[in-house]
Image (cartoon, rainbow, N blue to C red; front, top):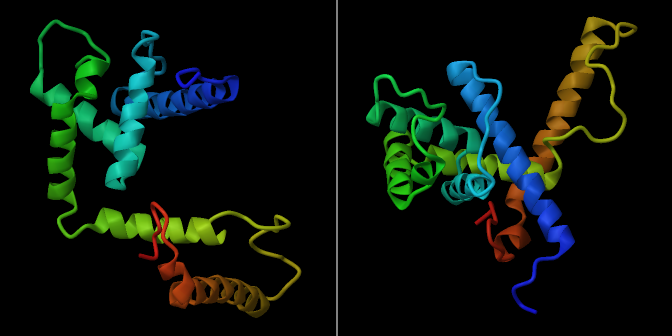
Length: 184
C-alpha cells in the first residue's frame, strides 16, 4: 500500500523528466550542436537528480548541466571515443559530481549571489510580478504621444516596484515559516 505510485504521480514524473531532457538537449545543442539524445530508460530518472541539485543550490538546471558536462568532458578526454556527454549519466549524477558542483558554485559565486538572485526571482514569482497578468497589450500604443507612452510605462514599472516593496516590508511574510520562503 505504501510503495505504490499512482497514475497522477507517474504522469507528473514523466513531465519533469521530459522538461529536464529538453533542457539537457538545449545545453548540448548550445555546446556541440547536437539535436537529439538517446538515453536508456533507466538513465532518464537520473536527470531528476540534476534538477534536485539545482533546487538545493539555488541555481538554474541549465547552469548545473552545462557546468557538469563541461567539467567531465575536460577531465575525461579520450581520443577516438565519441560520446555525446563525455561521461555516463550515472557518473554525471554521482556523489563526487555534487561535490564538484558545490566547489564550482563556491568559486563562481563567492558572496552567495546565486541565493540573492533566487530570492529576488522567487519573490517576484510569488507576487505574480514575473508573468503577464490580465489582457496582453502591445508595448507601444502608436496612438499616444511619446510623453504619454513614457508616462504609462513608468507608471506600470512603479506599480510593480511598489508591490514588491510592500511585500518586502510586510512582517507576516517573514513570520510565516515554509520551506523555501524567500523573505527569511
